Image (cartoon, rainbow, N blue to C red; front, side, top):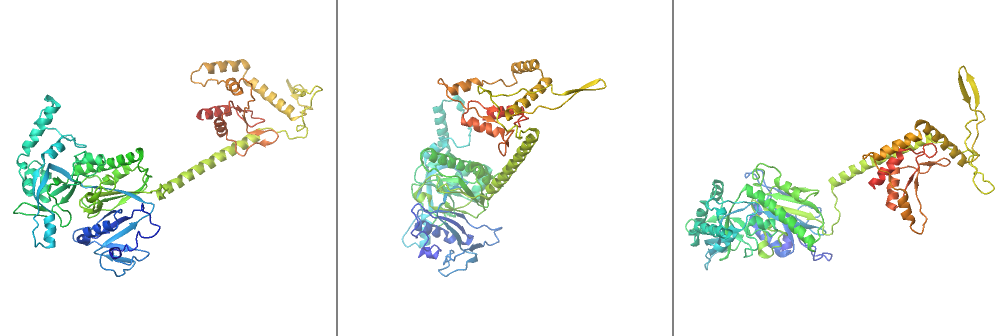
Length: 621
C-alpha cells in the first residue's frame, strides 16, 4: 500500500537483500510539499526503521518564483512520489508539488551530521505547563495543544552546571568578580550567587513570552534584534543533561546535540504561551528547554566542533576495535539559503572548506543550497537512538553527508585517474630518457673499447711444461730508427701480435698504465691520496678486507665478490642497458660483503667515475 503509493513497491524485499544492507534515501521535496513532509518522513521511518535519510528542500531564486523538481528513471517506478495517486507517471516529468527520491543500497555507507546554528542564551528551564487538551477538540486543536508550552520555570541545577562548564572555544571574563583574589571554591560560589541573583525572578513559573522578554535584556543588540524577529526554543533530547552540558563541547566530543531547536510558529498574546509547528513535537511537562539565537561566530565554532567530534568518533572506532572504516569517497554539503558567505563573515566556501580540511584527500565535495535539510539531527555520529533522533526538517541548518564503501572497495575518481595518468606519462618519459642516455653511453663505450676477435687472440693461452700460463711481455723496442733533419723518429715495423686473448689484455693494460704514469707519477699519486685522506670533507677509504673476512667466517668459507662491468672484449656488451647504480643497489640488498667495479675503459667500457657512482649508490641503499 504505502510503499506502492510513494514508488517503493518491492524495494528491499528481494531474496538477495541482507539485514546489514540498510537502505539509504536521498530526498528533494518541493517547498509546496512541506505540508505532507512530516507524514512522509514518519512513513519512511516506519517502513524502513534501519534506513538512513538525507536531502534538502528544493530552493528558488526568490520568494516570488515557484520551485520545480525533475525526475527521470530508466525504468518507471509505477507510482507518483508526490503523493498524487497510484497512476503511472512518465519516465521524465517536471513537478511543482512532490518529492523526488533516490533509494540506494549495497556496498555503501553514509555518516550524517547537522549543524543547527543555534546559540544558547539565558538559563535552562523546565516546562511546568503544556497546552490544554479538552474533550471535544478537533484534531487540529489537539495537535496545537500537544505542541504548546504554557509556562516554564528556571532549572537552577542545570543552569548552574551549564554556567560552570567551560564553553568550547569561548573564554568569558566577569568584570564584577575578582577571581584572582579568591580561591577556586570562593570564585565558584560567587559566580553561582551572581547567577542566581540575575535569575531570581525566573524561579517563579512564567509564560515563555514573558521569560523571553526578561532574557532579551541581557543580550547584545544583534541578539535582541533576532529574538524580536524570530523566537527559537530548544527541547532537551533524551531527558538528561549527559556528561557534557555545553553544546559546543558536546559536539567536539562526538556526543551530539543536547537540544533540538525549533522556531515558534505562533504565540498566545493573552496567556504568553508558544506553539511549535503542528505535529512537529509533543511537549511534555518536566522537559528541559532553552532559548536560542542565530549567530555567525557561533556557526563557525559549531561547524568546527562537529567535524572535530566526527574525527574523534572515527578514531575511537579504529583504536577501540570498532568499525574499521574505509577512506571516505565523497561528501555532500547541504546548507540552507541563509548560510552563505554573509553568515561566515564574508568568507565563501567556508563549510566545504572545513569538510575538505577534515576529509583530506577526498576526491569529491558537492552539494546545493536548500530551503531546509532533512534527516536525523545527530545522524550516525553520536549514536543517539529512539525518538530523540527521528528524521525531521531542519531550518537555517547545514547537513554533511560522508560516503564510503562498507567493504573498503577501491573507488574510481576521475581526478585521481587523471593525476595517475599524468604521473605514469611523466614516469614513462623519464624512463625513456634514462634508456636513451644508457644506450648512448653504451654506444660511446663500445666505440672507445678495443675488442680481440681475431683467430690468434681467441686461442687459449699456451702453458709451460709444469702447467703455468705463458704470457709474453709487450715489446717496446721493435721499431726502426729514422732521422729527419735533427729529429729522430721510431717507425713501427713488424709489430708483435698477441698469441692469446689473455696476452692481448695484458699488453693493452700495460700500455694504459704507462700512459697514466706519464700523466701522474706514483709519488704524486701517493701524495694526493694522503691529502685526500686528511681532508675532512672527502669520503674516507672503506674497509674492504674486513667484510670479506667476516663473510668467510672462522672456517674460511668460500666468498663470492660480484663484479660490475659494462662489456667483455670478446663478446661485447653484457646487457642491454648497463645501469650501474641500479645494479649496486640490488647487490647491496642481496647482502654481498663487497662489490668489484671494473673501471677499465679500453677493454671493459668502464670509467673512473663508475667507482664514485657505485659508492654513492651504495650510500643511498
